[in-house]
Image (tube, rainbow, N blue to C red):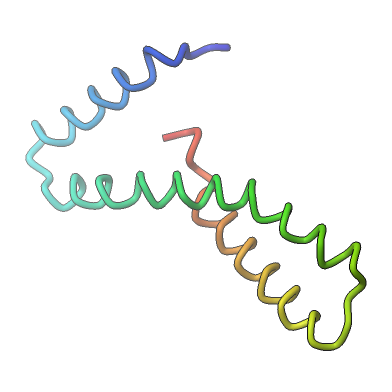
Length: 88
């Protein structure tokens, strides 16, 4: 593993310090909001497929197809939001 768990927070902290010292408050605000959203998006994209299993094993009926479609859409959105989580 290239980054041990103890070095990742330090690297992230140094990146945030660079943003603050460059006096870019808008960028800092974006990073402070985007980082938790990426975290939630990534882990939601990991966890949501487990909700497919009861629907698929129980058989999809007409009423379940709407739920399944909504679940797919939410999972796709979570994938888009969380796709850069490990890289930031």
